[in-house]
Amino acid sequence: MRLATTLRRFELETRPIHPDTRAALDLRWAQLPEHVKTPNQLLGRCAVGCEGTHGVFPKCNLTCSPCYHSADANKVRIDGDHTVDNVARQMAYLRKIRGPRAHAQLIGGEVSLLSAEDHAQALLAMRAAGREPMSMTHGDFDDEYLRDLVLDADGVPRFDKVSFAAHFDSLMRGRRGAVRPHSEAELNPFREKFAQMFVDLKRDHGVNRYLAHNMTVTPSNVDEVEQVTRDVLEMPYDMMSFQPAAFIGDDRRWREDFGEVTIDAVWERIERGAGHKLPWQATQFGDPRCNRSTVGVRVGAGFAALLDPEEPKDIAARDRFLDHFGGMIFGDVPKPILTVKVVRALAAHPGDIAPLIGLARRVLRRAGGLARVLREARRGKVSFKTFVVHNFMDAAQVDPAWKLMEQGLVADDPLLKETQERLGSCMYAMSHPESGRLVPACVQHSVLDPIENVELRRLLPLPGLRDGAEPQIVARPSGLSAVRETGPARVGSI
Ligand code: SF4
Image (cartoon, rainbow, N blue to C red; front, top):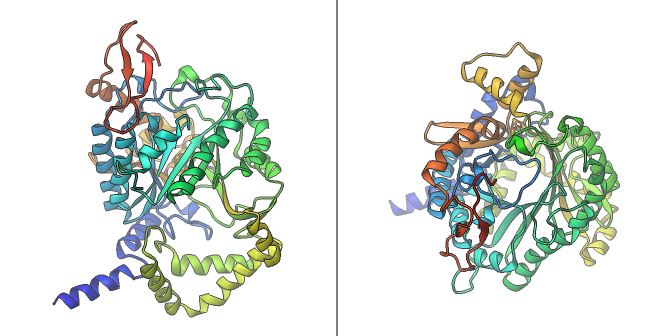
């Protein structure tokens, strides 16, 4: 009996695609609008999409323009117990609906205002639900905080890998040492210092990293995207993600005409900075009006995209991969189990081996050949890089479009119809276990955050609301780091 159970468990663990993943992917595909069911679509074929937390720590201690947090966000106290409980609940619901594995962002305010211990517990809760967590931060914290987060009280790593997305751009206000930056270049030492903390962590404790660099783009800094790309490519970031600003969140922080910056305009500048065309059409997450991305290998100053949309053999290899391997979980799987999974997948589709090897050869050729790759690898100049542009929508269009969707109505107005099409194909969802819903991040920020934060203000009021009050404690001393403060609370402060 025990042998039969063990064998059944082994069969399931080594099955190339977990049945819950298969079911979640099939459901995702079935629910996608027809216009995005294109051959390059990844949703429902190899991914369910990204996920994010909400309402778990709304507060932030910088003042950026624009800011996607609602006007009440800074009137909600940070509370680690609230954070961890709600993160666990939201992730459990995502596990139920979207299967055993997805990437999820620990997001909603400034994550480093949590004590290191609470932050670690939130990450562990996400991992327990099969999520690969990424902490979203402004990056203005010290090495001591990072180490307290990653290491336990005995100095032993509690994670073998951590992922952070750090937001750096000149629209941000209040960073220590760059309170009011006048250019993007002024932030380069801060970008470097942030990434270096993780390099040092790997050196000292063997903890791996995945680092994303995020930049909000408005008319005032769009022409700096090219140089930021050039500069950040020399730093140990794995992903460069750019977000053209949208009119979402706190309208007191809207200072420019964000509509002037288009997804194409940003991508062109990224390409100029990278010094290469960055072909993105071979794959798509959701609607192309929402986002585009490409992954490739940087070899020296060159870049080889993993897929060339103009090369039919690459496209054929992509299709085979999506048809036969899409949904296979590679992360956090013990190597022996992963090996058996891959062997089982290849044994079921032996005809895939040659096209996939052919793809690897073409990537190598695009990178300048094996000798060059080995030479650059010896200099530490070979790394995977991902480029992303994510184009959030304005609250003024999301709100009415969503209200109609809630009533099952398709909008007549062309802009609202487009908005509904994009929301229906959304690749970035937030979880509402209490109402049994997943909602697009655009809806969360445009429609739901303001309502949620009114309630959170009641649930987690700030201590002291008068001038001269004691400094607000924004992180509880349950972690190993010293308590961090944001200065005296003021009536009407944001
Ligand atoms: S609907 Fe909004 S959150 Fe979803 S993918 Fe599009 S822009 Fe992103």
